[in-house]
Structure formats: C-alpha cells, structure tokens
Image 1 (spheres, rainbow, N blue to C red):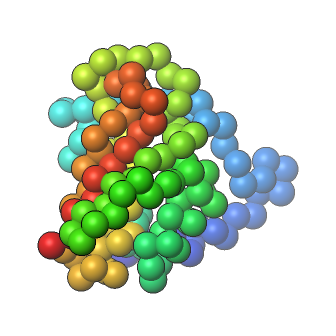
Image 2: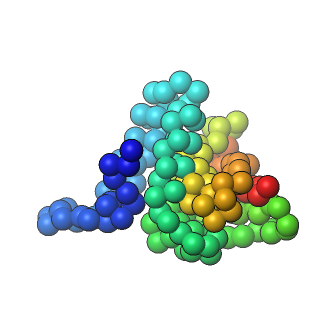
Amino acid sequence: MNLFTFDDMKNIKRKTLGDAVPLELFRSVRLIGMYQGLPMKGKNTTLAVGRKIGESMEVTSLEEALQLFEELKIGIPRVIEKNGSELHIAIEDCFCEGLPVHEGNMVCDLEGAILEGALSPIYKGKIHVREVKCNVNGDAECEYKIRFS
C-alpha cells in the first residue's frame, strides 16, 4: 500500500518556514536516530526506505536519476567508470562530508538504496548498489558500485 508518493512530497505549503530543513536535523535522524538507535546500524531500515523512495521517484534514465540526486541536494554524482554490467559513481558534497572520521564506518547506504530503487524499474529490478567508500570512513568521497545483471 502506497499512502504517499515522491510527487506528494513536493506539495509544500509552509508559508513561513518554506521547503528546507537544516542538514544537522537530517544528519541527526540518520546517524543518531537510525545508525546508532537501530539494530545493525539501521541498515535494513535504510535499505528498505531508500529503495521505496527511489522507486517513487519514477525516473526514466540513469542521467535523470543522477540529475535528481543533485537537484535534491543529496550530493553531486559523477560517473567514474562505466563498463558493460558495472557502473562506478562518486558523490561529491555528500551529506556526510565534514563529519568526524570513524574508520570502518560507511553511513551513506540510504543514498545508495535510493539510487537502486530509482534505477530498478529502468533495469527491470536486476540491479545492486553497494557503497564502497565514505567520507566518514576517511575516504575523499563517497562512492558506489552499481552492478546490473
């Protein structure tokens, strides 16, 4: 059952506060509430939520998905490598940039799941996105490997 869609989220009628919330609030929900507050660092939840959000976006191409990623200020995606069944994408200006480094931790699984959900209808659900680098881990950028089968 779909009570809400991505298009529903665009209906913003806040006259005084407008359409923006501070990044620190989003970070708090993600990293304090979900990452620290749920079992397995919230991974099952963020993957399910991200995929559902992505599916609701109804994009028709990889380019459109990457453009929407930037328009929503999730980050600035850049294709590093593309070959047959795999795509490697870096994300500049990710939401986690500037947070303290905690080696061994990757915190941007929600964003990868959004990409997976958005691209699944285009590639008939035969897609898998995996976060391979993260600013929080000490990497220069967040990166994802996308595998098509």
